[in-house]
Length: 243
Image 1 (cartoon, rainbow, N blue to C red):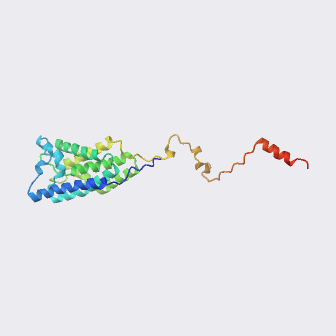
Image 2: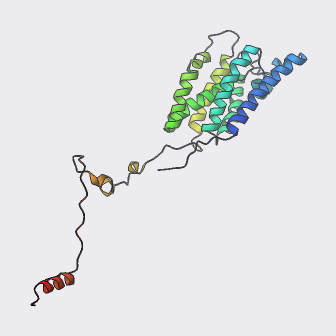
Image 3: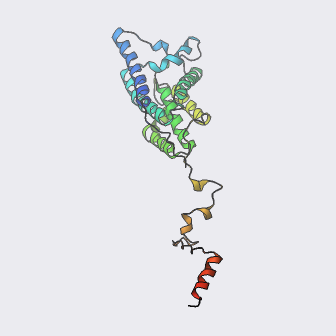
């Protein structure tokens, strides 16, 4: 059995997600404090100037409600990413931001698409599908938790609400699903026990030797002491020796 534990808490589990959330709050505070509006730095589909939004749009939010609704999922999901998938965390975040933004640029409606929700959908989708595919019970449990907490988010990949970038949500969901299939290495492997090995022979297992074919416990008989032929002959000769 592999005794190494791939799930170890480190400061990165807290520092990086918290720093990212604080940064998007700082951007929103800066807008309010100095009267700026950075909405035109969002993704504007199929225009060259709109490409810059791929990098900037996750840090821009249109209202306090928009910012609040994105902050908690972003914090929780990114912390889970750094804990359970720390070897892949930066690749999922960096490439997820780029590809989900670019896909939004391709399929989005003619408007500025802003907010971190596309990246949130990348994280949600990746951990949901990767946990199921990995066959690791820790990661599968994480997938079920993601479904329980954020399963309702799947409805918002459809145009069910006005002034909401469902294209960004759909892009994030698609990119996370693709990542779940592409990133096969650097994840915790399923725990394998010795009896799962194809070369394992039950007959040689010292524990199973205590049970008969019907599954009843039997005490292993003690082996009789080994004696050499010469010893037996000496003992026999001694017992029959004349006084």
